[in-house]
Length: 66
Ligand SMILES: [Zn+2]
View 1: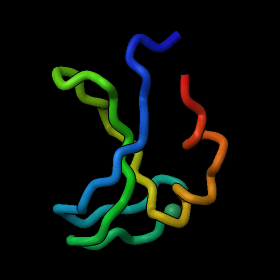
View 2: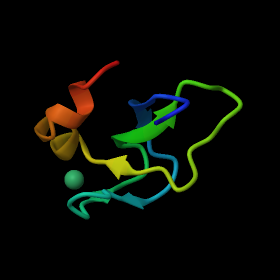
View 3: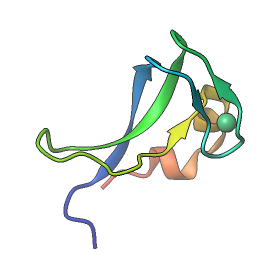
View 4: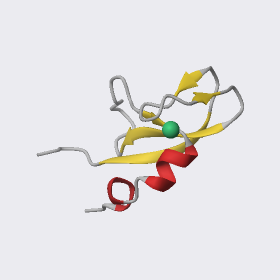
């Protein structure tokens, strides 16, 4: 059971990252999706990052809302 629902937030990359799913490069200045929680005082430890392709292709996970 999750206390704080996680969701995917679109953010602009401020440093070089890799997609957690397909390993694609996410370059500085590009947008990607980062795992976040609905609590401003809480941060996800080691959040997952998704490139736009994976985010749009994963359907179920992304659109599942409580
Ligand atoms: Zn990807």
